[in-house]
Image (cartoon, helix red, strand yellow):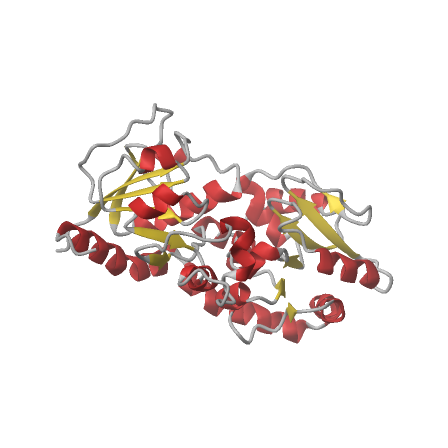
Length: 347
């Protein structure tokens, strides 16, 4: 029997992992996948998927001096450089000493990985990341694409009460949802321009947003109150479709919004980028690249049940790649190899 890895994990300076932001939600989902083949200790405590709060207590953070096979820390440079090896880190934010110390950096898409290998003006995948990394970066020893993980909770059917509440929040309209961080780097401005055109012919359609809003919103948009994480599946299912990020970051970052919709079986009207095709596949029928195409995709989710059915069929196939067991199967050999090589002094 293969020995289970023992992994230390920490996100910034957070003692626990509350589901109060996209980064922490994605982190918990990643640790859930790791827990399929490893014993993960978040801030020194066993991370327990399916247990309220993951079984974590609010404890002081201490720098571990050993006792683990692998260390994974996100955005805590001071602690990271003190850790023994092997150790891995999320590839953002960029800190030169962290990149030098890391045995590998992790990313969530192939576009992000290719942008770092190599990081150069000649690399088309590097260009969208310049505002993150600047002119130059230390070449990482290794880049691992961990992708993103679906939360199995989103596969479950919400209670009738929560669905009724969610429909009320969308005003009972044909809602297209956009939930999560809402700022200039993520907001679908092209989609909104198309939406403002289409509501002249389809007034029953409403664009509904919910989350941390950091930008002014057009008065035609329905803004909901902040949505608790446990109510998110019902909110997604109350929509006829959802929208995706469009900003510069969409060129190389994944999207939890897409995975949530995929898990719920709700079509995504998706701005086409390499990261979206990595999630949804090359032949997904609801991509757009300009306002005219976006208008047509909105019409289709309202009036064309065949296209909606095909979108759902393809999402059902694609979601298998992002379930915790699938992500664990893809990551286990890579991380075990990293630990073995580092133990032999070969990494």
